[in-house]
Image (cartoon, rainbow, N blue to C red; front, side):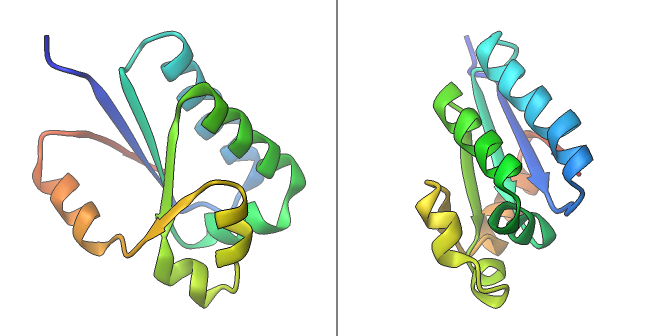
Length: 113
């Protein structure tokens, strides 16, 4: 059987959307087996939100503990001065242009918020 995968491109700096959609859905999707693999991609304003909001940081840790993979845009993190904050939480940082382009060219599922 083909492994199911969900990818969420998280660009929103809105904590309400992040808490009540992004983390609620992705953590449940992983814990309840709706998808075998769940990936969150941190890009732009979401990187700054993580660094500045303790509640969001706790949700990042909860998601990672549940088995959700979280990676982020290294360029964004560097530009916003939050690289160390994100790395400390266990977020993998890399230049995301090519990986995102490859994802978009594939048949993978992608939600953008």
